[in-house]
Length: 395
Ligand code: AMP
Image 1: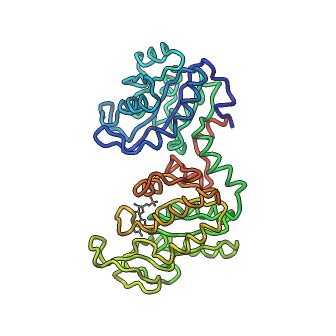
Image 2: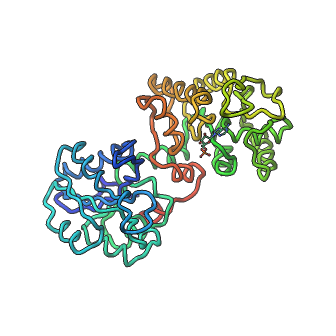
Image 3: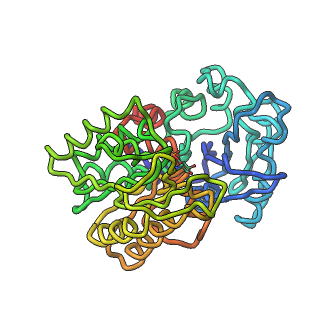
């Protein structure tokens, strides 16, 4: 695989696919994690006296005039972060934008408008890719969040460059979510949560061959518990996956992997009525209980397992964390992982998406070895699937 340091970008013009699809409210950036994560590559290019053209998508615009999804506020934000001018082009392939990139001097930066204002981006239209390629001599892909998508700016575009490579953000994502899985530090334990078994089943199956323990929390635990014969009341349940859950339990037994489910849960009769909240043992749920978080005993057990690991991968919240009453389990796992990371006791890898927003909800200063910038992409990679953008650039 080609990484940015393997190619000569000195004094060259580089086109970098970044992922600035960040949450915005009233033109304000709510979370800048993805923007900050792109800075190493940009700063390296500046050090190499390159001129830089940045491109990204934002959201799912309806059409060209969906100005709420303009990237212009990001250019202002980048100016502050980098303490330098960042030019902005109101279109990504117009003659004017090409002229702007052509006249870009060494160490200057241009950000192009939202790629998805053109249908060709999501269609992986080669005509659109070819136009984008006119911006620079070298192509760098540093957008992990979209790496599982086959789009013009991350797949088609690779056809038009001889000199191309991944940036530092991509390098780290590949290192922690892919390469380290092929040769994991043992004991490797994974913690899986979130709403649905269906979206995490491939990830769990992939780790049955690699992990020592698989800890399951979140809404998805109830499909396993029901399959094992427990009363789960009105907790989340995917009927179509009951047998698959049993298969996973059987398979884990055969392979000698410990599959750990919650021994107690925080439940309520009514999500909106805190007076109905109770902590119950997993064998004491009533038919009108809703399990909404892992309980205190499970938190303690999960912490013990975290402390016995050398590498831990976490994907998916332990409960309905958006409501404070049900966020303790997720907070407890986050704190335990933070502690083992700070003590250099274990490598901790956090899958992107909801897990990252959950952590940010209570404390954005927690430290982990690696936090992925991609939700869907990290899930795909941890499931052992090939990612379109990686395959395209490898060719
Ligand atoms: P996922 O996208 O599958 O990782 O699911 C994340 C979502 O699962 C979050 O919005 C959580 O609030 C939700 N979730 C996790 N555990 C539960 C639960 N026990 N009951 C309801 N929702 C849950």
